[in-house]
Length: 103
Image 1 (cartoon, rainbow, N blue to C red):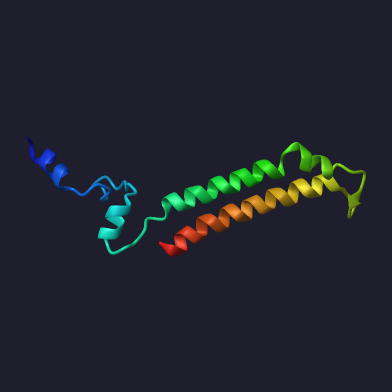
Image 2: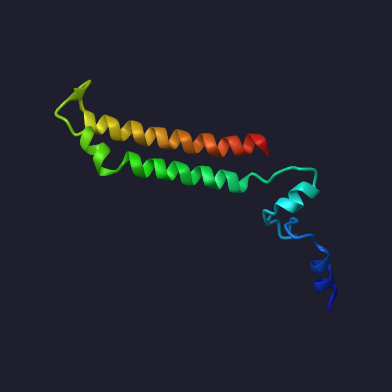
């Protein structure tokens, strides 16, 4: 067994690797004072934002706003698409910046 293999065997599972990568392991998180790594939660929230986007840009909702109505001279469908897109960008920014604040 080489020195490198012995060092790898001593390292706790989920401990930060020398290359900088981190692996989520709840047991290691508790062993390190209860600090949780927030990457998995952030990923789950981003998946939720993606699913919200899928619903917002799906046919039934787009059909509801496809009416011959204008808001300040702009068709209602265009206003809806722009505002939904803006909402998704704001949600993604909030999720990502919230993670940075907590770190």
